[in-house]
Image (tube, rainbow, N blue to C red; front, side):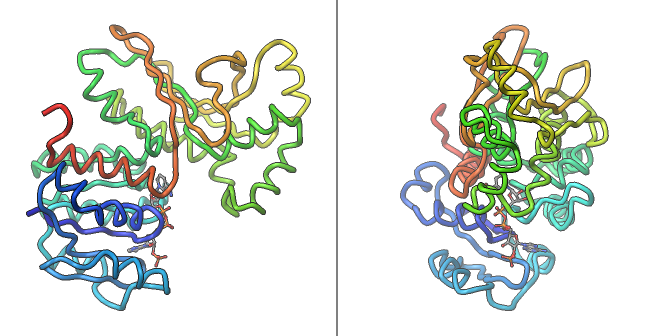
Length: 330
Ligand SMILES: NC(=O)c1ccc[n+]([C@@H]2O[C@H](COP(=O)([O-])OP(=O)(O)OC[C@H]3O[C@@H](n4cnc5c(N)ncnc54)[C@H](OP(=O)(O)O)[C@@H]3O)[C@@H](O)[C@H]2O)c1
């Protein structure tokens, strides 16, 4: 019996819960399991025998989870085999996720996270701690949402040297740029409209200034290319000064503009770049796209949904199956 704890019960935490409610589907992959705790910022539901996820989601719909143990109290007092950490990202301190992940690894629990902050701030420390404690730290959901990237590069491209990874890691920027490409509206017009339609968050500066892409690039560089990179190593230019005229000129010559994050031995950089209009990375809308360049397999492209409740939860479930599972290769 696998005992699971879910820390953070917003979009991603609830997405995971919804998939775990499909017991027949998931037990085929990992065998028997129970969720013994779920926690949000104000409360939690806990039971050593397993809680009802349906009830947890219903309670959460009405507000917060009931007052109860905090995440740290759950870690200290309860037995669980794997924690799913889905609290908000803070790339300056890594908190609260960093303390949660450290404490879980120290007590010998596996950790699966969608939270970029702890990995940007302390990837090396956490990876070494997981190794020392002989548990897994899995984070497929932190980069590229549903897209298989981390396990693809680390496992499926085993034996290859990864020469570079480059692509579109932020759906909000891509949405804005692909609409500028098609409609030649100004950056400000599209951003304002997208905010109104709630396609992008009210505070989109992390996205449009390239910070979110840079955080993901640091994770890829460290995890997949074995670099020892920090956020400050990334040269960052966002998309805020791109004009409709820039698109006009680019498109006359058969190019478009996308925010490209690239890690290679020459360094890490996030910046708007020209791409041939029909280049595989020139995807539209909120899609993400990544090109992994290797010495043996050469170019491998991945295109998919970089965010979304169920899409991100899909990556978390894939990590769960990776730790416990009967995946399709067995
Ligand atoms: N949404 C996506 O598509 C997506 C994609 C990839 C990665 N991610 C990452 O996944 C993580 C979760 O994203 P999300 O969209 O689910 O965010 P969200 O909807 O804001 O949910 C965050 C959850 O964490 C809880 N929380 C905050 N501080 C906490 C604390 N100290 N202890 C326990 N719980 C705490 C919040 O509690 P309250 O409910 O009480 O506020 C909320 O339930 C973030 O790090 C995000 O960057 C998200």
